[in-house]
Image (cartoon, rainbow, N blue to C red):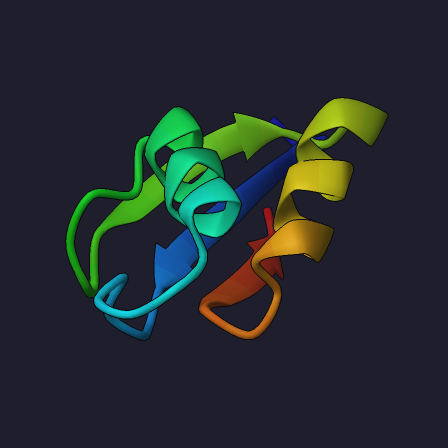
Length: 60
């Protein structure tokens, strides 16, 4: 599992733009401090780039 990313939502989704909220929910991040593990690919990296100010990302 070396090609995975551990994504943590560190800020609330209250007050963010609708496209950013939908992106976070598509990643499975519905509440602060929730952690999801996703594959490290271009699609996921693009989604992380959209909400980079709301998340913390670690490679696993």
